[in-house]
Image (cartoon, rainbow over all chains, first blue to last red; front, side, top):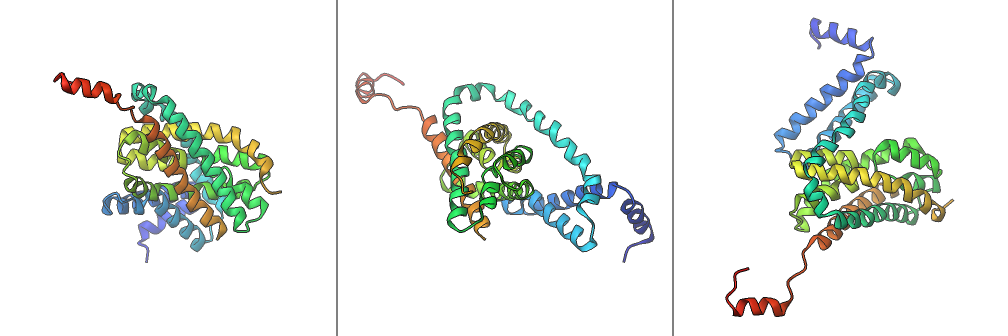
Length: 241
Length: 46
């Protein structure tokens, strides 16, 4: 049972747009505590846990998404400046970036094409509808770009947004294990591969592990966004109608 | 279900392929064998 003071706060917040913002911040702080307790295990990814908490809370309380987003839009707004700020750590890695431009660009093209072709091919082979297949194609890039590409090629932008989130969580959770298995030790490569495959959520995970990995994950995320926006509309001609 | 399988496998493939291609191209080529042997014979330090 809520204490009177807590009840007052709840009544105030539930009548104002701040409820979405407050719920988001509390969910993330709680999720990050779990992540810390789990000794930063990728399986306790804080984004994954906070999404699960928020979905549960919104479902149980019957809160419409629009009501939630009226408050959460303040966090959403900060995504823009946060993305631009990723250029700062990358700038500090400029000499390393210059030394490895060619391998990084080749890795980007290979990884980006594999992400699109394998997602589309597997979903089609398993009987997914043409709309779903097209919604999957841009799933490895950041949401604003992915939704724009999805709309352009005849996918469902709202489904693409969910698939992008899921891709980021899958990538952030599994990248450490996969790269350890391959014995990839270099943080430049580890970060870059994570950013290319798992956009912002993977980049956040990379920054939590190592600053250099985070900087190159940000580079991978940005470059893959541009490449996917160019390549997927071209590849769409071969996708099922 | 097809979506989940496609998401998981394609994300893993993208991580693996990006990492392996980048690593393969970042490796410096080994010095030619003849030069290495010559350097060893003369006792030269690398």
